Amino acid sequence: MTQTQSIAAPYTTTLRDGRAVTIRPLAEEDRQALHNFGMALPENDLLYLEDDFQNQDIISRLINAHAAENWRQVVALDNNHIVAYGAVRQLPGWFSHVGDIQLVVSDAWRRSGLGTAMAWKIVGSARDLGVKKIIVEMTEKQTAGQAIFQRLGFNVEGNLQKHACDRSGHLHNLLLLSYHIEE
Ligand SMILES: CC(C)(COP(=O)(O)OP(=O)(O)OC[C@H]1O[C@@H](n2cnc3c(N)ncnc32)[C@H](O)[C@@H]1OP(=O)(O)O)[C@@H](O)C(=O)NCCC(=O)NCCS
Figure 1 (cartoon, protein in one colour):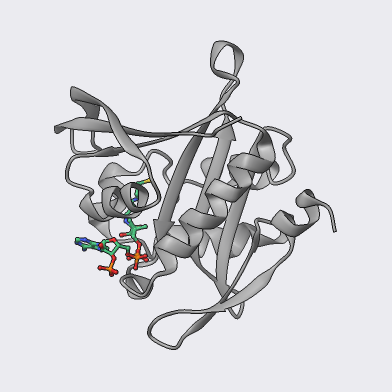
Figure 2 (figure 1 turned 30 degrees about the vertical axis):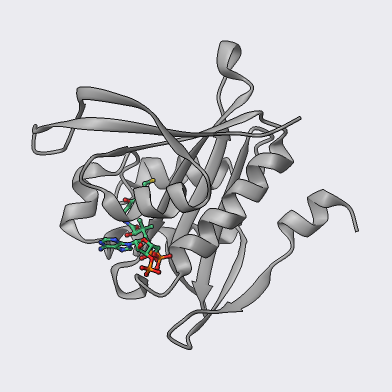
C-alpha cells in the first residue's frame, strides 16, 4: 500500500467515551452534512473560526477543493453526520513549504480524544503533502487547541498582539504554533 492510499483510507476509531467515529477524507457528497455540522457549532466557536462554516459559499469552496492537490481535508462521521473537520493547506508562493492547519470538533463530541485523533490524522496528511513546516493559528483563549498541538510537539513561535478580529469586532492576541518536519 502506498503512503497516499494509507492516508486517504477511511478507518473507524473508538473514542475514550466508547463512541465510534469513521475518519476519512472530505468527499463531494458531504456538502449537506458539512453545512449541518457548521450550523450546529456553538456561537462562541463561530466568533473565532477562520472559515465561516455557516456560509454556503465557504462550504462550496471547501467541497470544491475536496480533491485539490494543495489541500487535505478530513472529516469524522457518526453514521452520516459530520462531527469533526480538520484540514491542512499548502500555502502558495514563498510559503509553499508550509502547511496551515484547521481543526474543529462538534461541541457534543469534545473531551473524548477526537480532537487529538483528528490532529494526528492532519499532521500525517501534512507529511503526505510534502511540506517541511506545519503551522496552526489560534487565539490565546483557545486553550484546548494549544494543549492538543503542544502535546504533538508544536511550539509557540509567535504571539501577534491584537491580530485577530472576531465577528463581533473584538481584537485578540493570536498565537502561531509550529512544527518543523525533519528531512
Ligand atoms: C480544540 C478542539 C478541536 C479540541 O477537541 P476535543 O475533541 O475536545 O480534543 P481532545 O478530547 O482530544 O482533548 C485534547 C486535550 O485538549 C485539552 N482540552 C480539551 N478541551 C479543553 C478545555 N475545554 N479546556 C482546557 N483544556 C482542554 C485537554 O488537555 C485534552 O486532553 P485530556 O482530555 O486528555 O485532558 C475543540 O475544542 C474545538 O473544536 N474547539 C474550537 C476550534 C478550535 O479551537 N480549534 C483549534 C485551533 S485550529
